[in-house]
Image (cartoon, rainbow, N blue to C red):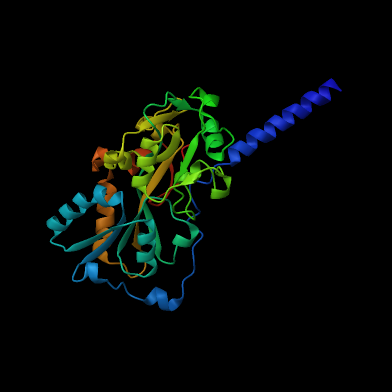
Length: 319
């Protein structure tokens, strides 16, 4: 009887552990799964909108790749005597630019969803950047285990005192953007239904920073660059995960820091603008020269550390 009880306890413990492991969403989608677009769409040429009228190339970038890549694109345009129009937007803006066929290159701060993989689109990874947990500077907590992070965002740990903090309720902040895309916040919990019912859903990056800064008992997340870029909204403190700081790029590269964004650009495989292919190749090659303040670890460092690629697209972690 005693042996049976021990076995049952072990089985329950193993099941709970496995369930915790499965809470996180997948980091990438399968590049082989694409959306088959109609023949009329495939044959439709790229047609520039007003923002790119008269340009040789049209590029649509998300709000982090835009400032990170713009100086390189401008230098490339100058050297090659090209007029390159660059639009700043979001992953949604870039996805629409592809679907509407109005840009030669589109940039994303998330890995592609299966619905982003339209016929003739190729994804190329520029690098990754830490997604940092943010709290108020007055909060004495400095570190959480990854399991604690998941339980906090689930609402299963709901007092800071349960993780050696103040005797107050935890206010979870969530900006659940790009829900259909893997990675980013979904590396904490796979979908919105897993998050705490007491979570405050945040609409913008600036609001995430200000809420985390103003509320002594809140916890949120954002990239290191966005935290710095919106510092005027308030000061925040970075939490370590399993004693690894989000600023430790060596640990991020080795796969020992679990939360990150993946930065990709796209090109067209069918009827491509040759100059766009050249620009994409240049940006990939120059990824290591992006200003460090943007917090992007280059594709070259990821390859050297054993991250998995299919052609130029990052598709797997090193572990």
